[in-house]
Length: 271
Length: 285
Image 1: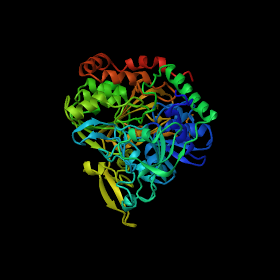
Image 2: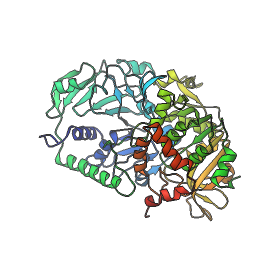
Image 3: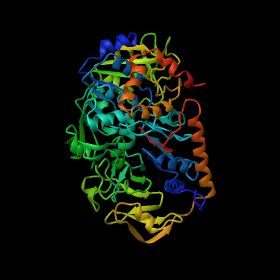
Image 4: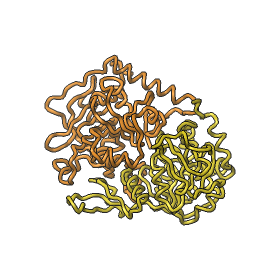
């Protein structure tokens, strides 16, 4: 905890939550997005539709799931559909307004790698792979990405194009015949980034309280572009912080109880 | 027509060396008991299909049963990476299986095409995605009406599929509830289907008209194995055993630890042991 009264992770989750609207239909991807989506639902966006790839539509979990297929998601959903239906009718059918993704490796154009570090055929590290992400990235109306900044994570060149953002920038996306907007927002623990209108390179538009330009650059593997006017992200409100902390406390208690184990990573990853 | 069998007999009759086999269950109802029986029977050279190869395929891969893997997300849910799969793919231990990697959308469509009796699945996918360059089974096809370039992948047609479900009735019809995942498609796409269930009930008279029921004539064998999805869960019966998934990360980190664990918990165990493993996870409801 910093003297600010909140942690960079809390700021990231809350800034990501704020980006979601009450009428959004959000496909909640692997990793950090789940907390942000549920904080949005528990604060300013009570009617947001959260979809997890296990087939749960309009879910409202009381605690954060450890996997995208926890029973809690099904118990609290408006409906639960099969996985083929999920990907055909709901994602490919164009019903999803926001695809919310995490990333192991990200480049400045919002391309994501969760497949391999190193060569595909002889990988240094075999990562889990894409799961739903390749088509979440191309079929959702737009894509939000959230991740903690690090030089390992935010790299000049990703090792594998698991899911396509803006390619090498410019009109690459349209040129491939993709009609959706792609990544329009990146929320890290330090800043809020949006793609430049022409080049599509992620540009810092807002820095979180107490963060300097040097902080942002030191944890990013490419030369960071800053917008002409860089704003300061409003600090979390008491309501936002309380909601997030209560959610995390409920989650911890639930997953420590009965047979459920504690997630040693302190965040949700998925399968 | 579904036969009621013990799991050992059902696996012996339906799974052979060299088969293409799917053990399905999308984060729920994962057929661990059936996979453990396959491990005990020492099947080899299998093409293992599964959208989300998690702990259960880590075990089969580590035991050297996999000739080829077809999958779309290979991770330990809520924990991280699969260490036996990594050791196989990165270091070739105990062998280096061939990898055919897809996205979830592709696998889901491929199972659906298999169930529909089609040779391939067509969908809007893999746009800009790197898998298209490394997987020869991802092709492009033009829509004959609009000219839109769509993705095509071969349908999934397993020799045999194994799934777990909540209930069978006395006739052998099977009910799947909760996150139904890909269970129906996995059964209908396969030449043979073996279903393990939590319990056998008299009938499904009290079940909703649109429930997910697999008629008995779509199933080869039904085996009653309470707890058979452990450490995954069975909605309405027991919770997911998250501690086991965390423990697996440590077990799978080391080859010798892994072998010792497999001997104790799989090779020297039996299907009936699963009931005890879920006793503390049973829902109060």
